[in-house]
Amino acid sequence: MDLFNSQGYAATTVEQIAEAAEVSPSTFFRYFPTKEDVVLIDDYDPLIVEAIRAQPPELPVVDALLLGMREVFEHLTEEEWASERRRQELFRSVPELLARQMQATVSAIDLLTGVIAERMGVPRDNTGARALAGAFVGVALTFLPPGRPGHFDSHDFDRIRSAMIGLRTHLDPLTP
Image (cartoon, rainbow, N blue to C red; front, side, top):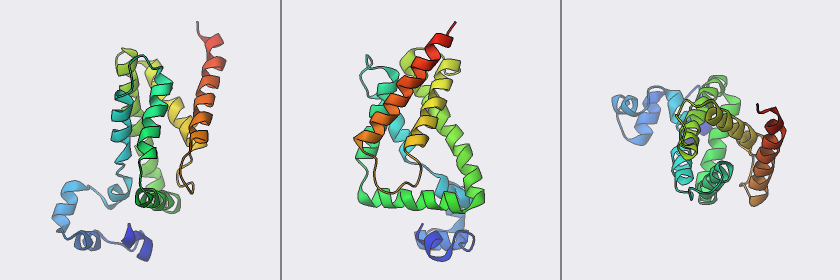
């Protein structure tokens, strides 16, 4: 990230990244198929999924999602927040990263679909679980936009919860 920030994403080579990490380029490619993957790797999604799994089973799914996400975000250090803001700035400024970020968002929805399906006791390919995962990610991105300065606070999570409850209220009458 320091190399990308100091000399630009396009000007930074895999060889320079490997040298800064004190590994060979072949070792780099063992962990990252492309240079884009260095920026795309998201260590937080698996942590969020595990935090959701750890919520009490009687907790409603949306509350479990929010509490899991909140637990992870509330424990990030200032350094981790700064790194995440730099990463999000790269997404906004490098077109090829923005396109790959969309693919990563679909992968995040896949992860959430799995944990939602587990909590609901339905198969992973359940339409309702996938729709809820997609809605949750969409609402979260609305109220917690990537790269926003600062940290998330309880007001942000309250807004997401209210929006998800609002969606449910609006969709329930449409349920056959």
